[in-house]
Image 1 (cartoon, rainbow over the protein chains, first blue to last red):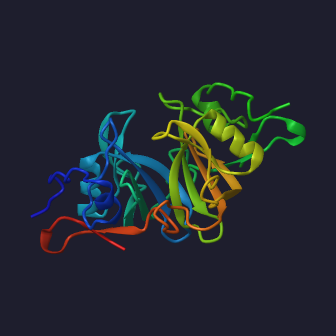
Image 2: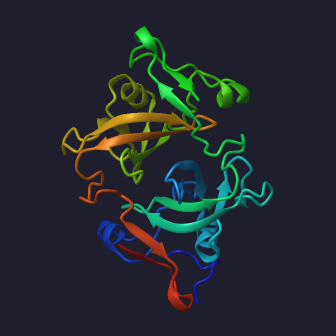
Image 3: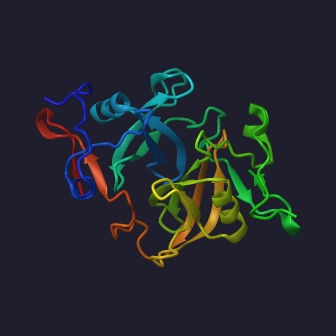
Length: 136
Length: 136
């Protein structure tokens, strides 16, 4: 029986990675894959985060978004202190299995600043050859 | 005059990073930020890639998507060999300025496998407690 503590099989060759039916994540040197999180309803990119094997396995097993915090060096369930949880509606993996895309039902803001999305500023080219600026 | 060879100012404190008007990217130890690329029209996540300072600056200055290839250790303009270019419609930056979201007009497939998006497989929990599987 597969549980959230079952290890993932190691990545195989490129053909299996790209065309296979097995999830064999390519964790980086720090043991992480990148997770892109979008709002299931609007498609908006809410945040980027990282998952280690346990966070990924718990996310699959529970349907709640679990991440690895690089700054705190700890596993966390999104919203466990803020209440701003993420229920996973769909999970996808990319061609070489080093990135995960989850579509979530986001409760409240996704960003710690209180913004709905962490990407609350546009980068706009500066007028008359000036440096780019950020606009909300 | 700001050009694609002008360096970005170094990141300041948290308040400036989160609320400021200046783009001061927090490049990682390898000099990279992560870029999430979505289809401007459909919102679909097409791919994840990395930008070093020059790739980011060229993307801003030209409106074409430029990346840093970690495997080839070289700068590349998306589509320069395949023709599958990405015209940037909008660029956003996240709260702590270590991730970029670009909405693009994608010509042809974004993925080197020929798929429209690199995220062409869903991760589905296995039935009866079996390991998760990938479905197209």
